[in-house]
Length: 203
Ligand code: GRF
Image (cartoon, rainbow, N blue to C red; front, side):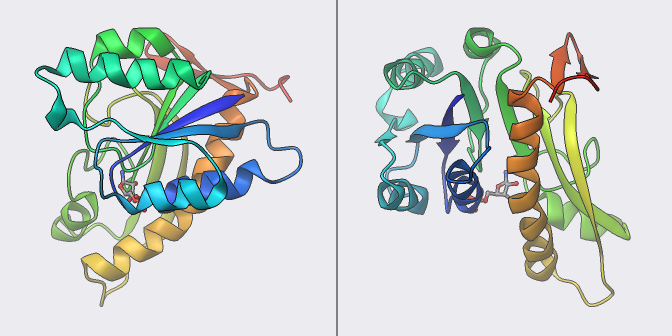
């Protein structure tokens, strides 16, 4: 399956997907990377991996609809079948998502439905949870609200600050995202309306 990865920043989750792409038996490959931020380090990672990378800067468009149209064109041009959000800091509309129903994934650094939105790790520390983690989910028009594909948990340690907790979660993100992409692309976990369905038969 051909993945389009949407990024806005460092792209370490993109890197995990690029690394998985190269492994035998992985059912997906990164076909293109699209960043809405021209200076995102993720673009460097794509270039280094020899994957086409394009900038679609939301600031260059008069409306969200125009921005999303340009995004769609970039994805179509690369023959993208699945879309992975990896630190992509824009919300996608229902109109956009309708073009890729059940084929848009996101990774979020909390155990959803706890702590959606920005600064999830800071929210977790402020709440005093003892277990944190990350979630890969199908994307709907809400903020980090879509049906869950896979999660990983990490402990919150007494001396943690935002940096140390984020690093511990990020290590798990890099393991979880390729795993979840494999589950989704292989049809083992599919979107079924507003829920996920697990097919034990799918390989
Ligand atoms: C990750 O923590 C991801 O879960 C969140 O934004 C961060 C992106 O990091 N959505 P990177 O750009 O993949 O390094």
